[in-house]
Length: 92
Image (cartoon, rainbow, N blue to C red; front, side, top):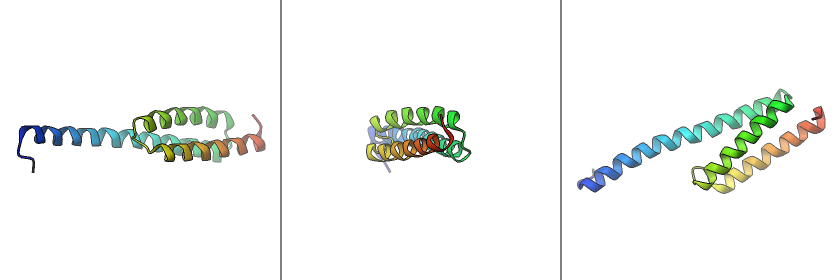
């Protein structure tokens, strides 16, 4: 347990930040799932819109290190590949 005032404050701050960051990571996972659902349903326009939003958040969170940059790039690449395959099948 923290004994100094500064250590107690840092513990409070770190718990608050942990909860905030967990919420933001959860929102990214939700967007990824929504994009994949749109791809599976072959809903091209909605998939592209949700893909753009997902990429925007992944870039933002990788800059802030909420998501590892390599993981963000890997997810973007896979989603982009799936969208491209969908466009080939369904059309724009």
